[in-house]
Length: 337
Ligand SMILES: C=CC1=C(C)c2cc3[nH]c(cc4nc(cc5[nH]c(cc1n2)c(C)c5CCC(=O)O)C(CCC(=O)O)=C4C)c(C)c3C=C
Ligand SMILES: [Fe+2]
Ligand SMILES: [Fe+2]
Image (cartoon, rainbow, N blue to C red; front, side):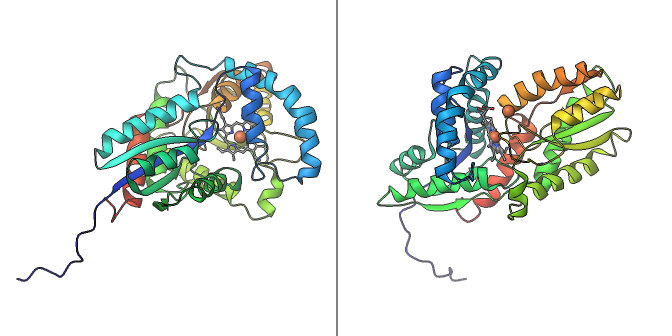
């Protein structure tokens, strides 16, 4: 049989994958925190208050007071490899590189701080990647996180004369690969606890409630992840109740409710025993899980009278999480690889 007609072979460039997460300070010190928070909180996707009002508050109050407080939080979770979020994202990229083989170049970047999305994009293009998949590791879409990565990507693209072709990883909050990975990973961790889990609190990062009414799908995405995950865990953990909460409130506006802090205080006051917290909105452990949930959350719960508390690890670079990332990435690379 005749071979089908093909187009003349084009020179095949490299395919790249860029894993992106939020970002992190360079050191757990007030100076580094001031630079990091300055960049983060100047992003109009994150703080949606007119510049004229927000600028004096940011520079006059927040950047004078918060860096020292945040530096203390980071210093309690800092590792020999640096910030947990950066170290874990780097490990995820290294593991994905092994899984994908030499055909694909895997890199990692941070939306705020280093390595930046812009520089990483330019370096990948210089390395010969002419097709790049940008994978923001946020399961739930949010303007403040996912869209902000796309803004940084746009800045990076604007600076390039010869641009690569781009694909972006859609949010995976309800993807069977994500729910399955969470079910397997959390089940294993639940089974290893020294006490019986009675209540599982699924704690997501909060957002100003206003963004929900403006049409941001984040709240709905969190709720759906929680519902599907609770259904997936129910057969193995029939006696465990699942609650949803939102953590890390910032500023004076009303944020999504209930707050994780109020849920832990209530459970503690009820004398609950066996309260376990998981954070299925975070692809990697970070200051928000390791300090806010594991240290301060425990204090809130125990001081209110609760006993037996645990915080489970995020998917991180563990096998369940990496099988998921590989599956999500391979699906988006169809036709390229
Ligand atoms: C996972 C999704 C996230 C959403 C949504 C989000 C929104 C959001 N965050 C802030 C303010 C802060 N967040 C901070 C840390 C932080 N936030 C996320 C993720 C989301 N944020 C992560 C993964 C981290 C950890 C970074 C790390 O280095 O470990 C911080 C800094 C820490 C602190 O000073 O408390 C701030 C500030 C706002 C205002 C917001 C939505 C509008
Ligand atoms: Fe945040
Ligand atoms: Fe926090």
